[in-house]
Every structure is written in C-alpha cells, then in structure tokens.
Amino acid sequence: MNTLLVTGTSTDVGKTVVTAALTALARAEGLAVAVCKPAQTGVAPGEPGDLAEVRRLAGPVPTLELARYPEPLAPDTAARRCGAPLLTLDETATAVRGLDAELTVVEGAGGLLVRVGEFTLLDLARELDAPVLVVAAAGLGTLNHTELTIRALDAAGVRCAGVVIGAWPAEPDLASLCNREDLPRLTGVPIVGAVPAGVGAWDHDRFTAAVPGWFAPGWSPRLPFNSDSPPSTWGFDTSQSGT
Image (tube, rainbow, N blue to C red):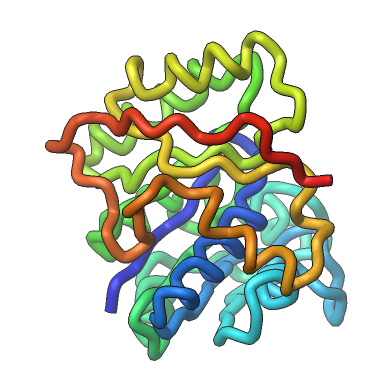
C-alpha cells in the first residue's frame, strides 16, 4: 500500500478539493483508493464533512474519519473543549495502515504542525514513512508559508511529493504569476498541480473529466516527487477557470 499525506500551508487553501482531485486522478489510473481524514472539526454529528465532499467530487471510495469535533478549531483544541479524548499517533497510524487500498490519501487539518491530537501531521508522515503533498495559496504571502512548510519537512527527513496550488484564480494578479515562477526556484520543489478556483462547486462528471489537466504531465499520486530530482519546469495553463 502506498500512502500520500496532504497538508496545507494554512487553513482554507483548498486541501479538500485537492484531495478529491488526487483521488479522482488515481482512480482514473485504475488504482483502488481510500481516503482518511483523521480529525474533522467545525461539523456537527450527522452533517456532511470533508470526506463527503471528496466522495461527491471524486466518486465512491472507502473513507475513514477517526474523530469529529463541532467547533471550527484546531483538532486538539476542539477535542479538549468538548471533553473528547485526543487521537494518538499509534491509533491513527494503525487505522491508516488498515485501509485496504493501493493508495491511501490522508488529508490533514490546517498546516503541517497543527496538532491533530497528541501529534502533528508531520509526526504521522514520519511514522508511516510517507511523502507529503503541500497545498499552497496562489497569492501574496505564499512564498514564506510554503518555504517554511518544506523546510520543516526537510528537517524531519520527510519526502515532499510536490506543491499544488489549491485555488488558481481565473484572473491571476501579478503576485500569483510571480509566485508560480518563484516557488520552485526558492523551495527546490516543483509545482506539480494547479486546481482552478471554484471547481469544488462542480458536479462529479465535470470535475473528474477535468482533473488530468490540472496536474503536470507524467505526474502521478503513486509516483511522488523525488527530492533528488531537479524541479519541474511545467508551466500550467493560467487560463483555466473554475466557472
């Protein structure tokens, strides 16, 4: 089983839509895929969460949510506030390993060092010996946030599977256009995908048909980026629109 973890440079950068896109791409390649969201926050019991959105966009795949907390806070904070037990690294890693799939995609909460429970997504990546895909914003501020995330991965000895822009605007501003060129140069990690802003509102058929065009030619979620390779020079289509 291969495992790919998805983190963001912050919250609300498009991790769930990118997770759905990765899932759809892997399914199109014929892989059996499962998706895990260890901790869901800000959603009441019985309400659809991020995994429901992944299934709606990417199609029916096995999913696993280990904990849910009603307040929209970091998972460990939300758990403490509602008196719920904190997730442990061992139970989470065991649950991920127990999923019967050729590729398991694990979506984190917020950024790399957000406490999922008694651990961070970085800790989980090390425990699973799994690469991490970084979802970044397009605009101003993303250079610092993305480089900090990738440096943290490097310091921990965790492989980076690449950077994906989580919501590429239909009309990118100057900062976004410059960031597209600067991110690979500054981080040493290629941009392997750019998901157009707004595609999370699409239906399943439209979404899955468009997914292959959002990723670099030849890149696959089962073939994560090797940090010993040179950064990609792929130039994604800035005319893509999620409308």
